[in-house]
Length: 522
Image (cartoon, rainbow, N blue to C red; front, side, top):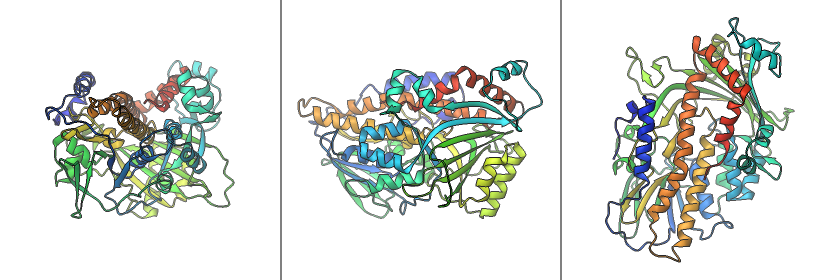
């Protein structure tokens, strides 16, 4: 059952949390609406819809040779014409990198060699003439006295922070003295995941328009007239505009493409990305730091990202700002009722480079963001992207992340299709990788245990997958949404934000939130 009023419920935190608990308990009880299921059989043929990070990682996890038994036939279908490795900006890999090592150490090494180690995160803001009474006391104990036109709010030395954390986090994020913390361009990561596949490559130009169950398995219908199958399982890894998610929620895939976005919530926050390819003559350090600069209603992020083995690192500068037509997720009454593009496929901005450079630089300047670092990157950027930040409501459907198509035949969601989240904790790709590993583990566990007992229900294993992953991804989604609104605050909110970050950094809360999100949960 689809919950059409979820958007309004999400606007009331107490009601939202209560409904979260009710839906979570309901949809993991293992209720089937098809009566007695037939004798279960192993999952051998899997269709993955979507060849993003989640879909490609899942194929690796299902087909990999070694740690998991019973490799299977896995087909990937994608609506795009192909993978453009110049699409997308930079991403962080921490818990996701640790998880890749579990899937295949050789694959993890390839990704690490194509990335840059991320060693530090630093947040700064412009200096303010007005101060809270306790600010002078904080400055006394500050590690660094700012002599420039900005103040340091917090710094996180990642290896030091992980070393001082609990045993679980240390074991997951420091392996053989290697810190599982890297940065890489999204396109470069996808390139490695595709090139390293054991079996068939993704099939492109395949837009899913229908899912049907049959005696032999699930059939997938595509817009080009082709029908693929039968499959024992269909996995939706097709992002926030997921057609498979629409099927899970409604039992059908509508011809209206906007229907597949009805559980997605527009945050009222936009991001502009500028990516400057590396120069062979650059003498860039082998490590990377991410620097945040907070202004009035806008903040900027700059960093250096791995662009693939043998390629010079790329530089990225991003400006994050409020949509003037929105107050949080609410559209202003006098604002035009226009479609907000999420740009999930990372299509390069159609505006001229000069226009984008001018707009990004002007926005940063007006908000008081220092241009010392972001300015040069924006000025020499080779490509630009703009995205509207959407996220999925964790309680959009009583079906949760799965739907039974026929007796014992299921479709299930993974990655952004299940839980698209705001990017403000840098956890989207990491959680997608963890989803893929967790789901593949449950499938392989089912295939192993069914050899001993034929009384097993595959639904219970899918329930276990969702139960394991729903709580951590929901927690990150809520924290990231709150963080995003706080970071783009203007006026009094910007002053509150700066002091809030300074205090949270000083007492270690910011560090704990980061590490909690980075620690794998599966």
